[in-house]
Amino acid sequence: MSVRFGVVGAPGDRRVTLFRDAVVARGLAEPYVIAWPDVLSGRPLAAPPGSLLRVDSPGEDAEADALLRGPGDPARVGGGAAWYAGFTAGLDRVAAIPGVRLLRDAGETAVLFDKRRCHAVLEAAGVPVPPAFPAGSYAELRAGMAERGWSRVFVKPAHGSSASGVIAFQAAGHQVKAVTSAAWTGGAPRNSLRLSSYAAEEEVRRLVDFLGPDGLHVERWFPKASLGDGRVFDLRVVAVAGRPTHAVVRASRAPMTNLHLGGGRGDLDVVRSRPELWERVLDVCARTAACFPGSPSVGVDVMVGADLRSVAVAEVNAFGDLLPGLPDLAGNGRDTYAEQVEAALAAEARREEVTARGQA
Image 1 (cartoon, helix red, strand yellow):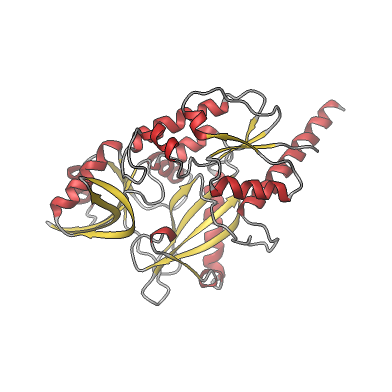
Image 2 (cartoon, rainbow, N blue to C red):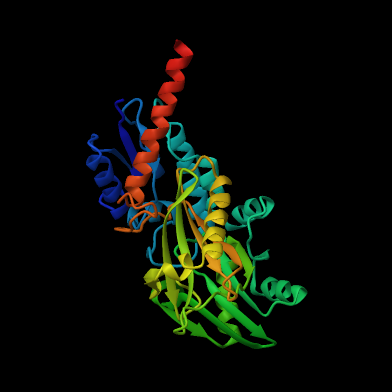
């Protein structure tokens, strides 16, 4: 079996490099790379015929960001609707490249990058998720909370990623508190690696109303379990070919546990030492992955309740596999990229076997 991989990504980005290393380590030719700016600018696209084409994140490529959201500081918050329109159009262009087979379904990827649609898919499948409602302004946010009797929520841009613009919000009348990675700089919010807190309602209103036109997904606050040292935790579980293969505990004293926002890796045995809880986590992740059968991998953010029994899915990430050096749960010594290469090769072998049987 001779297989040639290609990848749509940001040349030189860690994601492309790690995937390239996994492919080469398997004794295969270096993947053909299609740069996201070429996709987004309308340049002609081509790949070696028969390639298995992986679609990866545009990453931190400034040119790609400008093509998606327009010129400006790549660290700025907002512009999610424009980003989403450009990104999904790019996916359609990639899907139309002749002679290649996509390893990621474009339609599923579009759902994964719309938190409202993704939440609806999970809810319909019976996957536990926090209750939620859409909003487009601070007034709609407060009205929705009052209608449901909620005092604490997470406000998420519908098309955001990496916690960009996410607000952990609580309110009691006009007494409010908001924790977010968005910091106002030069009259506009920008992503910061340090979380900021706002206690003035007008400041919170200003931020929510800035983000609102792109669409907001508002989830009821799910009280997370604690490690006993003042840090709460959740898990990022990567499922490859529908099966949970890698997991990491993310812990923080802040509401957001993202590693780039000061969260740290916790001890996975906190969960694995509780067999019923661990099986529940794995089951929920497998059921989540089953909602997206055309996606070679998904990164599932699973929250464990303060009771250490309940679980809920907070996010499903199309490109949630950037966990360098994380070993697989089965002990095969494969990182997330090597696992995906093996899964793709196995699927290709099955496809060729079916084809051969049909020709016999």
